[in-house]
Length: 383
Image (cartoon, helix red, strand yellow):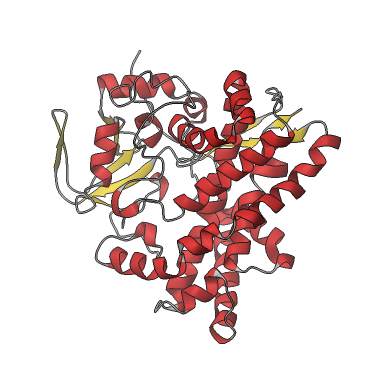
């Protein structure tokens, strides 16, 4: 059978593991003519590309359907290369501090308690709709200082920015309208913080020598990416831990195992399994030459299952000893919100398992979510 992979194919995306394995074995520098991209699927190649931002550029877009020969028209840090990326990351880091993140743990626990309370009386309870997709949105809004009365609207706008149109992906009128509305809302909030600062992230941003536009771009990136990826992480946790009930029981009995379990979940089912880059020069890989000005997709989801890097990579193991994964990226574009995502994942699972150490997923009613860069579950009913 001919080897074919593309991240827009819903059928492939449902269970891509065997195709990823064949890519790693047969075509580690894979070529897709239909969508004009190359793809790296082995861990070493994905990590090396992350470590070489001078060759593998982010400024032409990082999502397949958004990538063009022209630089991507966005001030978001994720779409910038050095030296502009270096400047922005340095300034943003002054506001997005470890202290601000660590200070959220008690609040995250309180949010979990409130969101999980209805589970006892609701059968089935939707692990994603009622919990996993709501929690990160509430946490991000709290961190930024979004008024509680606006948080449901903000979550709805975030969800709508990921609206998919067949054969078009996320570049469609519904998605773009939501992005514009959310951007305008954040700009208004930032203008308020500039005159009346508080002790929140938005206030920190306007005090960090960033322009208002740069503040809004980072806030938009954080609220969108932070909500979506953590929601997928928690959805995968519901499904994977049910499939490995013995390991779920271990976690329920010993919460100290949870930090490593979160890392194993991220390796095993990367919430964002594909990142795009643009080559600034010709690149030699595995006997082929990738021309300058090419789209290259870094298949993080495949890299996490590369048996060349992880023994028995297809096996989920909360006790796995490993020093790294690439699900948060690597190098200068390493996810700036990684500490927050890890905190949310650990606390959320600790609170779930303390109340419900056992659950069953209604697989017939569970609904997957597919985009070219995010992979997971939109709905996971559990009982």
